[in-house]
Length: 169
Image (tube, rainbow, N blue to C red; front, side, top):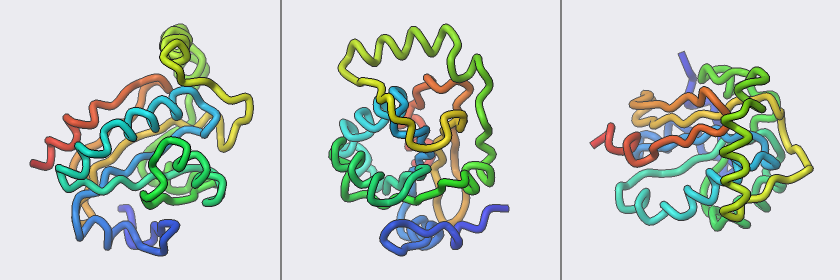
């Protein structure tokens, strides 16, 4: 059982309190150097108005210090959202997110999708910030309960955020 009250954001708020106010889309990111992480941040930034209209609070979980994460969130116009630093991947493990194998991280599907993301303007960084083997995931949390989830099978998987949000309606 996950203790949502022990997960504290950069603003000192616990996840249970946030999820009691309104649904939280809890986004576990790969490392910030990952092209798929950056692509997801761009997509989430583009959908901010949708999430706000639906009353969804975005909360990010990452593997670096708050100040470094703030630089990335600001770059993608996501600077106002709360986030959780988890360099030891403790919360990732509690939510069942595993370390990826070679195919999940570097397989042909990822190469093709990585090339596509790069062609759309999302560039990979040579600097890995976090555990390069950690797989991402997305959870819709409300009142301390997981309503829906998307567990990545491959690093390149793209969650259908709108479908996840609609599972609450």
